Image (cartoon, rainbow, N blue to C red; front, side, top):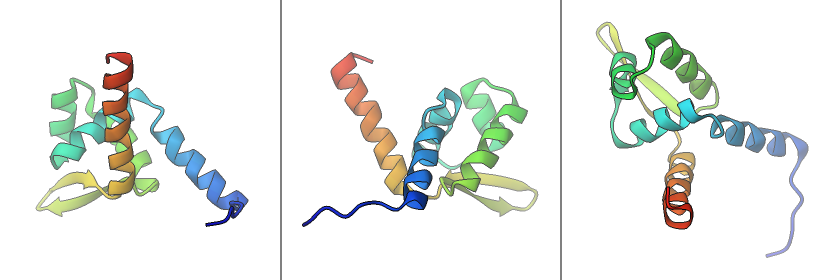
Length: 102
């Protein structure tokens, strides 16, 4: 396998993903959704945060295709949309626990 340079658009897109993963609130949301599908109210309750904060972060995560929503009657339920990134996040959490005693 030989080195292939990355184009600028791809590099920018990768940076946006890492930026999304750099926010503590988004990490909490993604970590929760890795384990179960949740509504905004469930996420807010589980994380002890304001519903408006959760909604704002979910919109950001949806724009990056990291989470998706499904409608059931009048309620929306959120789940991971990209398990590549979710696995990266979970591996990073495990790495941090192992190396930094987190």
